[in-house]
Each structure stands twice: as structure tokens, then as C-alpha cells.
Length: 251
Length: 197
Image (tube, rainbow over all chains, first blue to last red; front, side, top):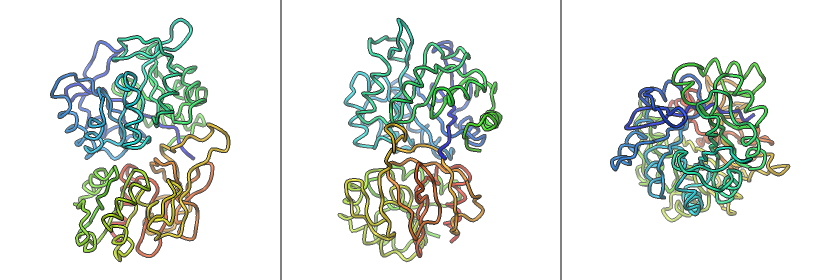
């Protein structure tokens, strides 16, 4: 039986792992390769590396980092952050990434999703959505949560899947950094109505939150960062807890 | 020992090379007929679309080279599907080492089954030297929308609404639907077993 996935997320800036609390106040949480290999050893099912560096040197540094990760990590990993063209994706996949994630660039040019899916296959195209609940619905935010759009997260997710996105990585900005649990309603809505896997992100604070998002929101995977980086939750203990609660996980 | 990794228009080849590296083996990525035919072991990896991949292989006569190999060959993911007889993916005639049909997953009820299958699933009914020291029900990483049906060459089974071939074996041809190169220690064990054949 296909298992639910636990995915640590490593935000990368200038080659180091950082994590923004509520997308701000970044703290250094270590070397990405070391941390990635450690998570793989502990039983993480996948890794996500989000590059938040914004310099011209970025692309070259990132592809070199991706190659180093691919050499050392024996589980699948996704690379995202500032990817805006077929060529960007080609470089990253050639460097050893298994999947890439697109966010703002895909929203601004939805045709990019079609192009990427056609060129590389849906299985390696993850659509990342940052969303905030306000005025009665969940809206898409761009540029790392700084720019609001009038588009509903569900509508954009559905369009992107129709265009060829193979997975949705959904981050609730309301929940991110709060440690109060994942956004169950929007995660469930996407998971129930789209026929691609949904990765829930934002809000994990304890192990029961993971059970909630898998059992009550039908998430296919759950992503978290700081609670893993600062060892508030260790992956082996989390897997054991999920198993005992009847969630199908890999050991 | 010389290990050739067949180079063609499919993704994920680098990952296979890195997985070999982690086992201390240097794999040569090549589409050169001589180099492939003279290798001790041949790996036929791939993520991609069947018809474009077959067309590419045919244009370079790599389909014939692969079919004629006598040394141990390991097909991975799309590589395994291309070693089958026919794929529903754009109605593609494949290499035909395995007399097996490749079909698309069908959801019995709309949206019940997510396609592609992405993630870790267990393999059962293991009976191949590939799986020495790999426990029954070991988890492997899968990413695919098409699957090889069960048949005489099935040596491992996975369930995703239906039972299908997680691995095939016939004579010197070995094939796995999952990605051993991305399946942590259990996957590395399978690659090691293959290299030790």
C-alpha cells in the first residue's frame, strides 16, 4: 500500500539552510547536505530544498548544490525557488534533482506548467501555492507571501493540474510558523477534488498534527521545517507515532 | 568490472550514476554500441514518455543492441516498461524482452486513485536473486502512471488498487518499476545484488 510521506523542507540561502518564521526572521539551521543526508537516514520519505537566494550567482551555485545533494542523498528530492523557465528546470534535473517546484512564475505564466509537463513529464512538476484565508476564502499569494492575488487557491490548483502539474505543495500562511496544526479544510478540499497528490505545509507543531492532516484532510504528504531542524520532533519518533495511530507509513 | 548506463532522451540517468558511485562503482553513461555490448553489466534507466523514448532508441538502433545483450541488464522504471512488449502510452511497440503488456492505471471511481502513483509502496512475492537480503514488504519509491501487468516473468508484486509487476526477470534481463537508486538502503541493496551477479 502506498504510504503517507513525511517531507522535511530545507530553505536554502547562499548554500545554507534557513527557515523563515512566518516568512520572516530567518535563522540559520545548518548545512543542507549534512541535514538532508541525516533526514534520509532517519527515515524521511523525500526532501524539499527551496532556494531563497536572490543574487545573479544564484543559478550556478544552486545547480552545484543540487549535484552535491544528489551525490549524497539516497531518497528523492524536489528543488524550488525562483524557477521560471524550461532551461532553469532542465539544468536542475540534469544536475540531479528528481522534481522541481514552481510558484510565482507559473501563476504569472500558466503556460509554463504546460511546457514543463510536456518537456519533462508531470511526475517531476510540483506546483507550490502559498495561500491565506481571508474574507471567507483561501487566496493565492505570490513572491514568498508578499503579494496578494484575487485568485482562489482551489481554482488555481485545479487549473495547474489540468495543465499538467503532478503534485501540489500547499502552504497555509495563516498556519505557517504558528505550530498550531495544518490548515485542514483547504488541504482536504484540494486532496478530495484533484487527482494528484497534495503535500500539506505550514503549522506542524506536534505529532498529532500530522495524524490530523493525513486522517482528516487526506493529505498524501506533510511537509515541515523548523520542528525538524530544531529537533522538536524527530522523524523516527514521528513515524512510530503515526504507525501506532494507524497511519500507513514507511519504516 | 565495466558498468554501462544507457544514455538516451530520458531523465534521471544522473541519479543512477550517483547511486553506483555511493556503492563505489563507476558507471559509464553511453549510447555507444560497442561500449554497451562489451560492458559486464548494463543499466537501462529512465523517466519519460514511452513513444518518444522508443523512437529515439530505434533511430540509433539501440533497441536492437539492448534486445541482443547477453550480460545482466537492469531496466528501471521507463526502462522496464520499454523492455516489455507493448505500452498503452501512445500505443507504443516496445523492445519485447518480456511478454508483458504495459497499461495505464485506471481509477475505479473518479479521483479515488491519484495518477501518477508517487511515493513509497511495498513489494511482495519476491523471488529473484535481485532481492537477496531484501525483506518481503520492503518499501520502494515509485513514480509512474503506467504499469506492467502480472505475468510469467513477474518476480515482485505491488498493489495500487490492482496488483501489478513491481519487478520482472527473464534470463539475463532484470527490471524494476520502482527507483532503487532513490529507495534508500533497500534500493541500494538491489543495485548491489545486480552488480554482484
